[in-house]
Length: 308
Image 1 (cartoon, helix red, strand yellow):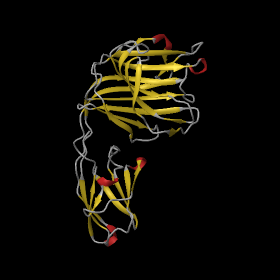
Image 2 (tube, helix red, strand yellow):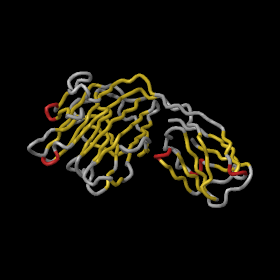
Image 3 (cartoon, one colour):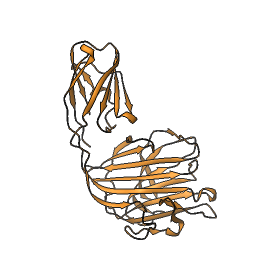
């Protein structure tokens, strides 16, 4: 994951007009390795899923959904995949209930074993914990032992009895993992956390695993899986405009979604080579940030360095 600094020339006098210099950002992913949206109405071809396939069905919305089962149990399906380093995974998951440790979802990005409810070496995302909030957590599994290596922030669901989210995981060529989520009503990815781990390099399979009670057995939905080769960002977003909100706050809007990995680092913003802001507010729906300073913004020409 690469980051770029950008200097913008600001004049807070003369109607606070902004002169800015455009930098570089490129979001390039190529050579799709696996794509599955279940639009063909089945799960046995391109790709071929194996495991507890009888426990899942493609529903009328052409999404994969778990089927009703008479007792509490686990179920999994997997498919061949050797993707590990330099890969990005994306998918949609929905749980039509309040998740818990007894009703949870896992997605295995990497596994050396096709049977996802047995001993294996790999990495997975888990959704499901007790309480009114959720977090999206990333684990390394070694045989039957799991270690949490990204602890996502607690989230309050907009619907008490439903969890719906898009997930994006990046594993770059250096071994860094970046976990993102995106709300269904947003176009921007929110970083949940990052870590470095290259403990397991063997990748043979990818797939999903559910644990459920009898009353929740048919309430898991999965869709829009994409596994692609990852290429590092090389061009930064362009600034559309910058506006002074008040005497101490500057709003900067970009032409596309921005990577939130470094956006909240206040020390990376420098006004006139010496002044750091006291707060950074990320506005996901407008692709913008509010840069808040402790004192008044000075009149005249100013230079603000950004970590974007």
